[in-house]
Image 1: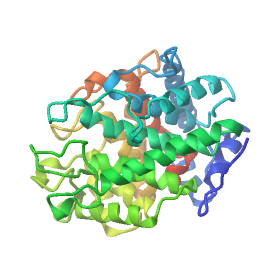
Image 2: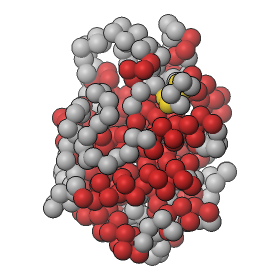
Image 3: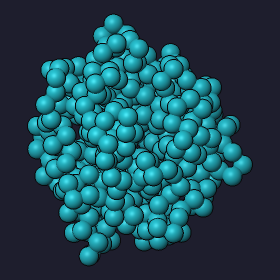
Length: 382
């Protein structure tokens, strides 16, 4: 096993320790965030739930290596599934899921276009009506994040083709970030491949969050990601903050109509990844989320919210904040998730929006919302 060590964090060593038998590895202060929060029985229930979710996902892999989902959701859905397995300590080419993970990674690599975009469907109709110009940018960033997370775990001949894919994807990401924006508020962020003539947002926090995680993960894996790329993005993120509510908005138009738990969680998470997890912006976002707990499964507090998507972002964000925020958030989320897991190990498809992506998508997100206590994925280390 060849491991590439981040210049700033020793995160890539963690999967090796987990594979050796440390199922709930935490480091230093991070261990107290969850080990004292959950009883031994709750840990057992959490482990069992995550393992059942992964067992379900394993049954949903196709012959081409992809996990079940519509073409417009690929390879992003497959990448989320890989991240879910990694978050429990499973590695490519090792253990019960090793071969399946390797096939999934190869599928994702095969989806890259010549321009660097990791999305294999043609985008022929460059108008607002073509959904592919919206989903493609999500697929690209989620896949890029997965590949950079797994890059340090690759061996021999597998590493250089993956590195080339990542470098090409990073170039595409930067090109999209620096496109001309009509409003200065949108500079530094990302949006769909076709500029938004409907909402007049040329960037949004949802797309931007995935792109920043991709850049941050790539930088941790020692790819050439100039710090200005991330600084430009973080200036946009800070402009998405809504001081009057202590929250974050999806876009700069009709701000109060675009505040969801996912966007608040995303804002907190990005601040944390940039070293600002103890800032007033992040803490006020945490207080906002504590007032809107995940105590009703597959329900939403905003008409454009996605439950599982929100649960994923908020769980990662509140772990980063730690302390009273994590203690006040995670037990409620965990109880809700475990009480509503299906007998086959899955979670239901979205009840509001994005239902077309099915329950493989939501199961992967649910696993990722439950695994922050394990502290295995480098990008989400506190």
